[in-house]
Image (cartoon, one colour):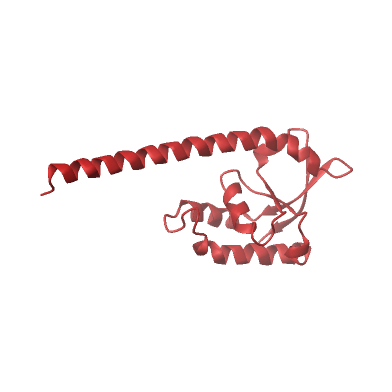
Length: 151
């Protein structure tokens, strides 16, 4: 049976973890809100001369895998090793569509909002200037031209 002191220590640890989780959720929401507010104005910089936004879209299967890798406890935010097969498929899909991904620094990828930051972190070491957008970041008047689907 745990001592009263050990029980208090365990209780404090649980309370501290809960507070940290609550703060992370709050700051994550704030980051998302800031990104959404800025995203629409930043998208105008990405428009072509014909005022169209040319994007590559993720296959729904890949988006599902990306969402699952976010939700999996074995794939914490800072340990992206479990997502390596997915990353390989993303890079291979980009190569099929636009050639060498290293030279495709101006590629714009469109994926659902919840996965956007995770996808950005996955691709950043290989494509530091790739743009990853969520549909919510697009202004209502923006015309999107799909250049292909990453499978």
